[in-house]
Length: 131
Image (cartoon, rainbow, N blue to C red):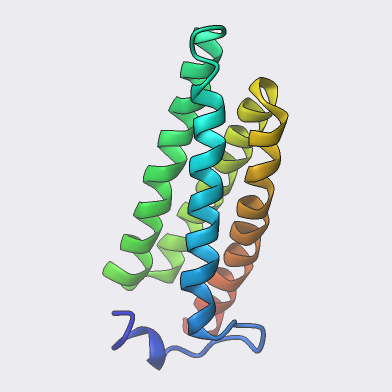
């Protein structure tokens, strides 16, 4: 659907060029991995809080994958738009949990939170323009 359906959609003027998504997501996943590693490193000292933080991390990662399926697989920007709000909340909670354990791991989540904030507006705009 990325090469067939997505190009046919009407997109807002602020839609970034397609080539930007791969490097941005690559950098965000690297930062998420480093953040999770910094949190995991504290498991021997703060087992319960680390387990809780990593549970939120796993949930937001699953929701991240689900968004792609809803948007591109089901070709349903409305459902993906509703789901991305839940994803944003889980990313925010992961940020809060990670920052309690390691400040740097929290900071590493800020670009992700900002990008998904932008993606939420973009998703909503695409839905609105193509309803």
